[in-house]
Image (cartoon, rainbow, N blue to C red):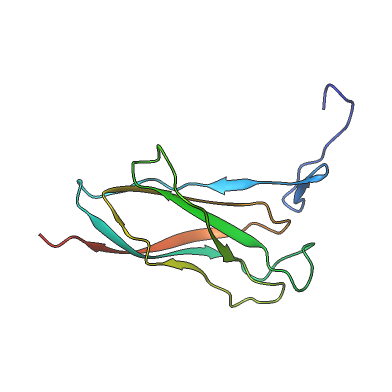
Length: 130
């Protein structure tokens, strides 16, 4: 940095910032359907699973999800899922029975020292019956 004279290198293959794990955060757009109540049956984050690196062979890196039911102003509890141990390539990252909302925002985050590949997300929704 300019204050301590230390040079840093950026790369998609680096998972730490000096001596700290890099924290990442992804937040897609809000889920809103003209103020109709939506029942959130399942959220699946599509990643490249089983690529844990320096966390050890018996430890799986994790991903945390939170959601907001007020358009992203406040977020609730953290719910954690496994990204799969190294070599567990069939691991799926899914949260189920997520309640209902009229204006929801999801966000997921983590700090695990592993490759971060996010391909997308799928959400199983059901509309409130009129």
